[in-house]
Image (tube, rainbow, N blue to C red; front, side, top):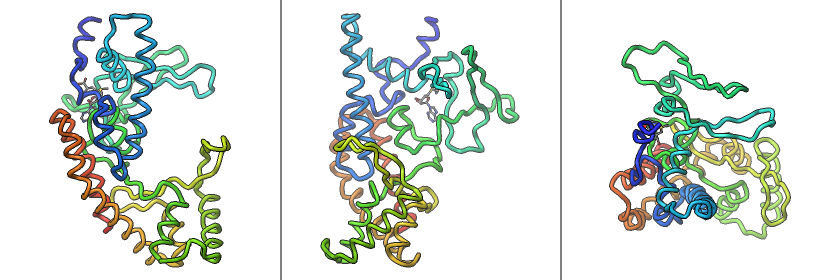
Length: 303
Ligand SMILES: C[S@@+](CC[C@H](N)C(=O)[O-])C[C@H]1O[C@@H](n2cnc3c(N)ncnc32)[C@H](O)[C@@H]1O
């Protein structure tokens, strides 16, 4: 056991355990387009660490905050989530020595093994294709965009076909942006009726239920308004703009305009980001830069 623990990333190995563990990153990324979700994740994570540290500290006053952050990061980056689909048992996390050495790949063809745990908590890991002697095993830690890996694991997958850039937070924001682009008046009745129709139509097809914090009610919202790797435009965004613009060419032109606008915003924030990340270690600085440049590449590809 001691040998195993000493083989783990040690305290201070920040990069190996993710940017979410560094509060200074939250400041560096705040207000920068498309990092808003990363910042929200990091803020939640920081609060969870603080709250749980206070509880642990009550049990063991010799525990330092750095030790606690290190332990939480290892649990995040090295454990397997055991979920009981029938809901009879709460979700648990298993630290499986040996299996926790397998790296992730976001390239489906490179993934060559998979895992499962049975009802008796026996953990199986098996090859899903022939693996030659000396070849590396790769698991999929999930079909996630770069944000997830940078924040909670401290790396970016070599190639990530699941990476994306969110162009709008919801359908109303998108239509409001488009109204301004067209120079229409916010009080224009015809425009507003048409917007209502489009939002309802896209919501019926692609909307997801979310909890409205103000009213406490569940509402259907259009969320997946994104561009993905290889000039992929999400179905909900294409439908929304097709309906509003009346034809596909104009819809694509509007999406391009938005991409250009966001790229300009991201590039112009570079100075602020560089100042913010100057306090991070060189590895983490590189991670933030790569994270942003991959987003810019996605925007560039459609411009
Ligand atoms: C479950 S561990 C995998 C084993 C780890 N490489 C080790 O040597 O202990 C997860 C950590 O491995 C690293 N990792 C996993 N997949 C990676 C990849 N494709 N590229 C770079 N680092 C990766 C990250 O530091 C991540 O937090």
